[in-house]
Image 1: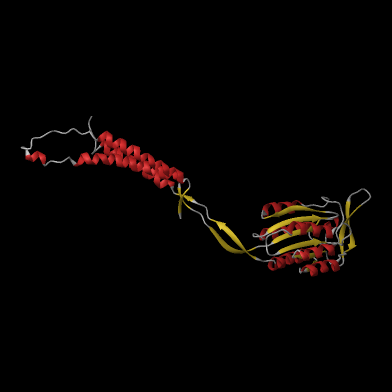
Image 2: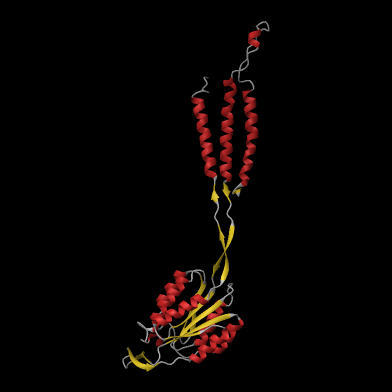
Length: 330
């Protein structure tokens, strides 16, 4: 559909009226006439030469060029249009435990680095989702609010390290913070992926209370317990304050994590190694698909250039005619 970006410029066509009136009055007596006796009948039958009429064509060409310029100024353009297509997308928050125990080396190179790498790959693959990132240890905070900016999310995930928060494992606070981030989302499907390697030992909100809130808000929680079966090398400080690693029993509060997922309609997973964790994220990726309507807007295209070129062409034609066939002498 063609429309004008500046239709008010069409009012400039009104200047044609005074220009035409001026031209008529100027040329009314421009050509001399000769009185001839009626006795000379051959002369009375002679009309004006065609070239005299053709000279008025110069004026018409000039008006046409001016008209083309006015239309070009009004900027004719094909209007854009909204179209709707179906795609898959959800609102999702990743809640990641960054407590010191996440440095345990039953994953390669450790739990935190493995989780960061796999989470970053997961984020990159969810192109149509609105996603956020919450991190927790002894406390919780929103690292990245809900966004579709994959680069910002991945960049922040890769920058995570132990020591950003007070140590501890506040699973309930991490879940509650995630709920606050996602509850007002517009997608039909809302989910939280909560990844931890321990038991709730601090914080204000209990994990099960947070799970009940998530359930009321229609948010599914996928919980992932990170840690091998048996023992793992855990970090601990020596007498000089340096980190050293020693074998220690892996203890994960799977009961609470299972209850969280059961209450919210999600699912609990146990990740015992890098490959298993990668498979877990792949399964969640398959489960969390929701069809949504995405509106696209096609931009407008300007079509003023043909009118501008037409004006230039008409002016050149006038110039050529004036210098050749319609050339006049003073």
